[in-house]
Amino acid sequence: MKNKTYTKQFILLLILVVALCFISISLGSVSIPFKDIFAVFLGDETIKESWQTIILNFRVPKAITAVLVGSGLSISGLLMQTLFRNPLAGPFVLGISSGASLGVALLILGSSFFGGIAFLESTNWSIAIASSLGSFLVLSAVILAANKVRNTMSILIIGLMFGSFTAAIISVLSYFSEAQQIQQYVFWSFGSLGNLSWDELSVFITIYLIGFTGVFAIIKPLNSFLLGEKYAKSLGINIKQSRIIILVITSLLTGVITAFSGPIAFIGLAVPHIAKLIFTTSNHKILIPATAITGAIVLLICDIIAQLPTLEYTLPINAITSLFGAPVVIWLLIRKKKIYV
Amino acid sequence: MTTSKKHIVLETKNLTIGYQQKKAKKIIASNVNLAIEKGRFIALLGKNGIGKSTLLRTISKVQNQLSGDVFLNDKNLNKYSNKELATNLSLVLTERLPESQLTVFELIALGRQPYTNWIDTLSEKDIKKINVAIQLTEVEHLKEHRFYELSDGQLQRVLIARALAQDTDVIILDEPTAHLDMHHTFKIFQLLKNLVETTQKTILISTHQINLAIEVVDELIIMNGNEVISGKTNDLIEQNKLEDLFPKEILHFNKNLRQFTISKNN
Image (cartoon, rainbow over all chains, first blue to last red; front, side, top):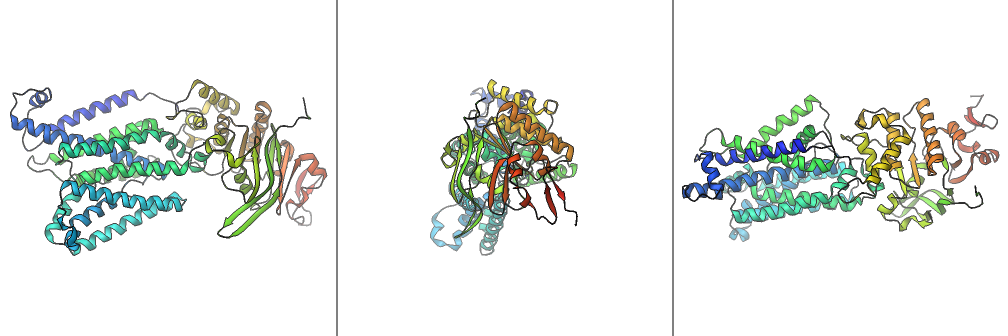
């Protein structure tokens, strides 16, 4: 495809990412001046030790998490929209996020149900594993269905069905659970960008990078999908293989993100549309980095908004993304500035 | 001009086309024996539902044959990988393109995918081929437009340009004039005819524009019942092969006019 130069947009957006990261790091229950934050980054040992700990072990991991979650979910959304040629596709619609929720619900709520696994404490780690397993399971089911059903629209409906199926199981589980467990589950489902240690973050980054690298290997099939599957095949693309790679990448990214920061809605659906509006291209060579950067920006903004009302509390990130995402999608539809797949 | 030495690009031997449904076979046509030479313009005729698309899909490996063989450049179609096939045969389909923001240039450039590297970078050769395709189809002025802004006739030219950019010996078009008025239909036929002459590619179309096809194309393939016959247009007319295409009480073929006309007593 032809390369128009989007260097200017990319540089501006990257500067914005860095700026927002600093703003996000500066906000919190303890206020730390900008110059001291810089000093900590430059390795100044004279800054208060508690401030150093807060910045390096809490706020920096949180900012990194925001960037990973925002870009990862947005890329997943873009992949789903192109694969299913449907502007409403996203990790949520496919049931992948619901799978992750089911895994976590089984772990937290099910422990009273199945006494046997009660020894598994609901730590960050076990929640991460449960949610990855859950999303992987639903995704495998979707892949199996995808191999049987040729029609991409049917796959989308199957994904929705998986979503409502898992939601039903979760309501049944919560009906029989104790208040304390329900509370724990509800807190997880609010989503959170904080609370990740560097150990957890390194696992997060590793899996994220595997998925993110994979995305670049499928730019070519993604571009050919813009003409529809029949043309893609006539251009020498192995449809089945590309479809599976796309689904695996999506489940890796969505799975690991949901595992560590809860089910975060709307980013995957809304951000690709914003990126398409800014960059006005369908070429995935441009669109993938564009969507990733836009996603990071949007989530950093959401994170900053979540901090704003009081410096004592942080609002649940999931509420903010939906508050932000729903109007954006409605606005896009009403403005009828064509929605592109 | 060595007419004695024929160069067959596309050949079918005892081909049976149709669908495999569970255990039952639905045969659309059997004993299809075609031999299509390089540099010919061929029209596939037949009434609605007779299986033209099935035949085109089978010889372009979109769907499998029930039995028999298809040879493309003397190699069995089943032995082609997707990618290799993409450098020998290109398609122009009837279905609408999914919505996207592709520009005309980008759309035509997608035809180079079988030749580009893993990240889809266009080489100088790719750009050259794309520009040749753009010139031949006369869509230069549309290059920077988005494809959804085009009229049906313009879009068809662009899709033909995309197939040309793919640089294959054979181009198959499924009803390329389906949405077009008489004027644009004629222009597309004329364009395809010129392309065959200038590029020596083989172009096979299915069409319902029978009267026009008779005037323009070199050869016809006629699907009738489950018989498939082919040959030079004039030979087929001489052999009264067009008569049976439609019920005679409604449409009959007028040999002198070389056209189908509405039967008088109707």
